[in-house]
Length: 195
Image (cartoon, rainbow, N blue to C red; front, side, top):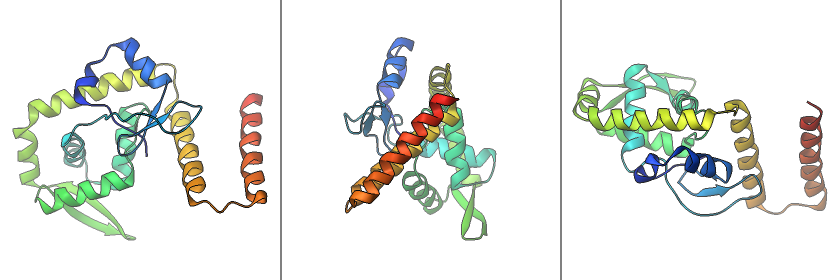
């Protein structure tokens, strides 16, 4: 549910990164969700085509994982500055499986655990230079995103924004429902102020 930057933009300076981080959150398909004050905005990407696929393959080569675990691992590496949505992760895992680079090692309660195949590990070795560059940029972005910020709070803010946006897009809110949403937001603001 949160976003991306183009490869050329991953080489930005520290001040530029702080500016981008302060002034906007990024959507699952690369859309800018805006700063804390609103939704919408420009379109930039964190991963170029194929880069997220390589990162996911690397993660499941390190440790077989469920989709949710992959989302959390990427979010942690980027200090809460970005977490891919299930709508991005699961199709990528399916693609990796279809390409023979990943396999489902177990299914528990309808959840699939993915692991890299030998062909997938060989693909990572062939793309080691590109992968190293991507992981280096992720580490730098995570360092900058994490400076003075709590990944847990950033994740909670993004979850709140996403839930609100999804509910507003469904429409058909009654006056009572709008009042309840406003009251919940006001209550959260008061609770935060009292911490």
